[in-house]
Image (cartoon, rainbow, N blue to C red; front, top):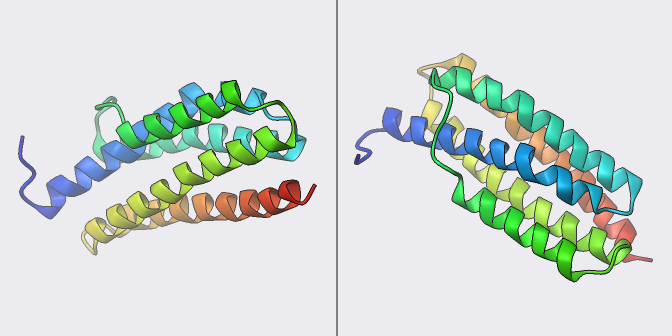
Length: 154
């Protein structure tokens, strides 16, 4: 199907966001368990818990339960899993994993901003819900950035 208008593109964007959260919920637990730093592990678990809740919010916007796999989120998780396999446990691995998860958050923030723009003024409730998701992703990204700086100084 060819997307021809903003409403259709909004649906595509929200489906992509929802499926990105499915990737996080399914694959980030293994990555989180490979971290050494407790604060990093807790931040990753916050992302996992948030992803499960946010999938419901996004599914409600769509009125449908499933969609196509999210390629960018899957690729970023592939990168994180490769970091687990190829980096020694400890601060170096934690820095690599924070970098991978921050890539996810950066892509997610941009995708959320696109969906917010597409939501426009037609449905203020959806726009506000998406803005809350964007703010949560931004807050977590800033937290992980601060962690990254602390771990890299060691």
